[in-house]
Length: 356
Image (cartoon, rainbow, N blue to C red; front, side):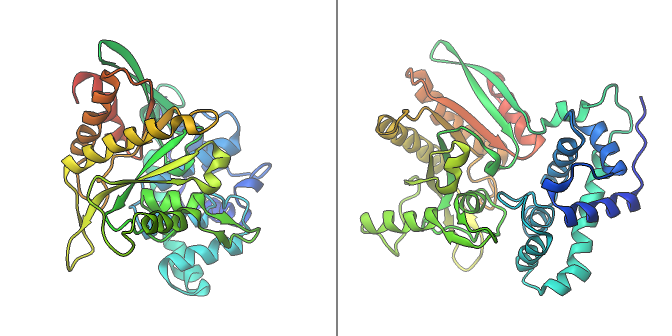
């Protein structure tokens, strides 16, 4: 059955309405262009949920960095912002670009919403047999399961295809870090920034009241006597999860895999350091598991070093899997998860049983 593309002007107008209303106030609003696109792309049952899933998917395909981050704040998709008033979301998005709210309203916001509309149009299939076919390919808001053999037994891996700050009920999330254990600012779009942002405790206006992950990492470095000095690549530091505890995430393990390149804003990441960090993270999980009630059992890995570290997805996954497979082959009973943002990365995880 052929699907007609929504009118771009109508899409943009409705995106502006979503920006004004916010996600929590979409019920009862008429958004025919977005609802039509969502019906062709997602399988969510309610119109509001379908539109939100569509917007999350479209925004996830924007270039990582200021554009994607500003879009997440503008539409209330960033963790903890879905009920913010439009003025607060606009102000936070303006701060991402470092411009005044008025300049953002007149210039950047139009550009951001236009880019979201363009990606919505790209998602709508020209031909599809059944509604939701695109969701089957991408896995909007879903989990996939991958069965692999390790140590002579079948083990089920869980694959999440969504932003890391949407994880629910995973005990430990492993976060990539640089060897200085210096966290990126919360408005950045990296895994580490997303986790720091989601872990922050905020007031009713969205202001940060507590930044526990940042503060605990500094205390960790002080206890080790290394404040102000880099750690060795492969080092793992554990902190609490701050506000993420409300989502069932209990610990964050910061894996130091990125070495800053002198005189640049770039990093070097070696696959061997990724493998070493993953091995250390699993060893730390074994040390900590019974100190918590209930015991820690599940751990989730992003593709470490595949962002600004520059590792290809395949190389990062192979480095992670080398350590994970060795641990599972020894009989470890950990519930292992992967979280990725792109179809290409998801396809690689799904090919683990075939040797990638």
